[in-house]
Image (cartoon, rainbow, N blue to C red):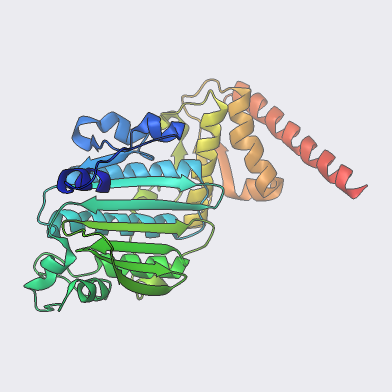
Length: 350
């Protein structure tokens, strides 16, 4: 979207967008997808795409989709998904509340090799300096506006917000030793290794605001420590609990199905993330499922047993409402995985 901005405002240069990476070409990163016009895609495949959100409903859909997709493709340490969900919610809401525009853009991607994910939020609004200029804070310049924007309680209007958004994001990124870059009114606030610097852009960037942050999903985040004792309620985790507080996962509700190895891997990652976040035992409900593929059983159950060990697996995961056919398929996958583990141990020992 920054490319689009300069294409429209810069009359001195010609722009050629050359995309050599096949993934970038496929997803067309110079064009934004409007959430309201692509709800089905946004629900199922939201990463590696630029999304244009125009209202609170768009935000809600995107945030849930981001968290769901992340939880299925990577395993995050405790607090990472909660910290991300809180942060992205606040930053997207800031766009609609303070930018002076009724829309914004967001893009997210995962780097599995380096174990981090990165999200960038962009708007074409008035910028942070102009937003705070007529507030009680009255920043002297754009650099001061960025510096005070990451402090607690800084907002242009207390009737609209409490000033927790950028401050909270800054705290969560710092707790994770991640990266944060805010660009607004031709000034950059850059946080790396918990050291911040503010500098002027060589080229003018007067309109809009960019908030770009990166979290290491292999590092635990203490949300309570980051947010000064505040612990946000995880509504998604609560929705998985029954009246007694037990976590129930109904496999029949999984859109990916129970027939492929890919689906088994997604659900396995999701279960591990749920356990890391809650520390509670998880019941897998096989009700109304008559058959599963052996590859699905191996990827989901077999690899969970291999990862946690047989006894820990039985303490963490409870399998309920299985038919005899399902039991046979799962028992075979467990036996094969345990045999593989035994052979690996035997080879390494001798």
